[in-house]
Amino acid sequence: MSSDREVVERAAGRAHELMSCSGCAQAVLAALQEEFGIGDTEAFKAASALSGGVVCQGETCGALIGALMALGLAVGREDIADTPTYRGAMQHGVEVCRRFGEELQKQFGFSQTPASGLCPEIQRNIYGRAYNMADEAERLAFLAAGAHSDSGCPRVCAVAARVAAEKLLQCMKRR
Amino acid sequence: MPSNEQLIEHISRQAHENDRFSGCSQAVLCSLQEAFDIGTGEAFKAATVFGGGVSYQGETCGALIGALMALGLVAGRQRMEDTETYRETMVHGADVCRRFRKELETRLGFSESLTSSMCRDIQRRIYGRSFDMTDEADYQAFLEAGGHGDQGCLRVCAIAARVAAEKIIELTGRR
Image (tube, rainbow over all chains, first blue to last red; front, top):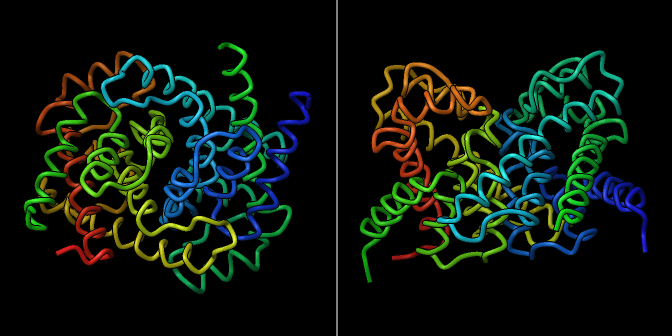
């Protein structure tokens, strides 16, 4: 049986690798689904249009969204009327968001924690500027800046998967 | 069989009612899943922690995320390697985001265009200020301002569900 550390490293490595196909939300979610055997193909499909800061809108980081979808699969509510489970899961979600910022700072060596989980904020920290991904010329400039290279967004995916994997392990031990 | 217009009205009303339980993403996704018979309970669970602009972060509107997850269920990719389907879904997703902002402006009577789909920006327009939903006192202030009232976020859910329903009908060619 794998140690917790091996589980976390494997999920992070797989998310990094899957990002070569584009789509940060699905890259992270798929890595966590594989590692923890959670969810199904429908849950994976549902993450199709959330990458690049929610459909390239420059909003919440898709890698974080994929991580939070995996959290939902592990501890989420199955019935809309189950408010206690919803509130419990939300507390875990808040923690994953906070940990994501801290871990980005640590792994990338940022001078401070990113002010938010927004895609442009993370881009500015990594690439020195943000790109409008809905614009084709800007998207190409984003790629030229190393966005899909090992030190770009695949690394962000690895961080998101790592943080979520740690949280999932913690939640499973409480059961 | 109801007409498309009747179906859209029903979905929109259902999303509005579902949000009384809290959790805008699941409120919207659930109404679309039931009406179009799409996805699974796992896809629904995956949407648990996006309320309040992604786990109370005030970022991307959870109702919009629920709408985009429904779009993913209808048009999304099932395999990471299927980049073509991914790109097509992203184009539809961008359209849903644009229409969502437009419908919010029209139906909620905003005097100026919305420049983002962020929870805190939408809150400012509806309630005159934004709320830090991670802070218990501010969360209470959000509720007192009508956050879960018929004129508050419930209406945002209704609009997100409406926009997604229209897009799904366009994509599936339902008559």
